[in-house]
Length: 513
Ligand code: GDP
Image (cartoon, rainbow, N blue to C red; front, side, top):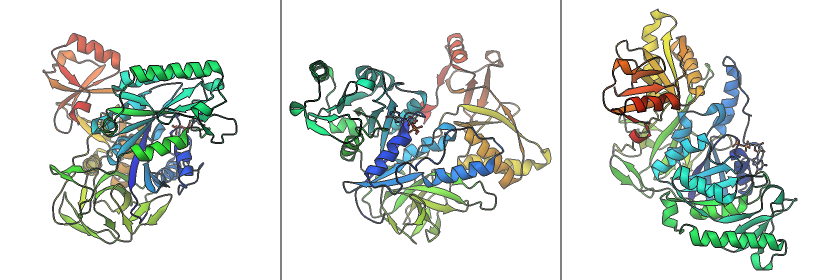
């Protein structure tokens, strides 16, 4: 980790079960990853009892250590940031995407684009970073490849360019044809890698050849033009077909990944572009992981290095407060396990021991310039609950806890007009559980929850909401900046509302980010 090899930092965006873990394992294996294949996921999706915190702690411990993984391939250090899905889905998953330079979108060929992929895609597309697509599970009977490309183009509004093309699928899968170099990677039962030039191949029957040649001709005629520039600004996604489970097409994907993934780019801080080559060390905190064990209240702040070089023991300034601090021994790096790191480069992630001074979005600078990287956006919540302190006498602690946890980015806070009831919002259930637990353990306050069935939030960007527009299927709240937000039960109630009150302009919140 102390080397100065080029860096490529990415995260996988996918829906649970598309094959993120399997693909990660195979990539780590190919890169001689610090973690050997088969040990990435320390857990399976099963539900846990809310009270079973020891178990969550154990599980989260695992998810902490696998938050950042590395592999070296063709002399490039590849950093993989984990994007927790399943019941671990939270705002941290979104925030992680602000710390990567490239996203790899994994799509299940049977299911196509699913809900969580779409949400995560939006964050990447807003940032305009390259998105490489891996269409997985080619060994199963999936959708037609052309249909999958059309789906990406229609739903995500992004051009596609297949880098390889499947020959058959499921039981009839024969191989993939690499379009740029006209070679066939043959699919065989033993999963041995076998690549032959197309003109020398002897594995395809004539109808398979005909179909392939037809498809390729169609792609050449009707397909998009490939330019690296379009890939770099996220306008076009190179698409790779394969099967992570059979290690099929994975190495070809990785070969292309090191060519196409973005290097650490300049980022905007306080209105100016900071180059990764700048001598000044800068970075921002994109996630803070609290320890659930009451005996060890330490927290880990994840810092993405944007410029300069990190050296253990260096002095940095926290831009928000101007406070200086030394990043010494206790600041450890996350690889397969905690270990101290002596140096780290732009693109790397370091884990900083945090006694409570950091907030999500904080910038650290080695020097006196008070630079601040652009504010971390808040993401549209999908779960809501009204909260109260069980013991009204503890209101002081209650307010202090809420204010700090909201500031830290654990949960979002909304208030009802008039009565100013506290409504919390989150993108995943886990955030509620962490909030409840930390209120109890750090602020000694038991919280009572009244869970709502609202699932959609819409910011009112034009027009006035009147009492007669509201009923128990929707609710009006104000966000932290005092902006009106209506919570809806589902798409149906939302659409009905919009038809009835076309004078109101509603925004999903994404536009405000
Ligand atoms: P994640 O939830 O996205 O991390 O998905 P996993 O990697 O855990 O995979 C979900 C399930 O799909 C597991 O049972 C995998 O074995 C299976 N799977 C992953 N890749 C493939 C593939 O290429 N083909 C088939 N048939 N199954 C796969």
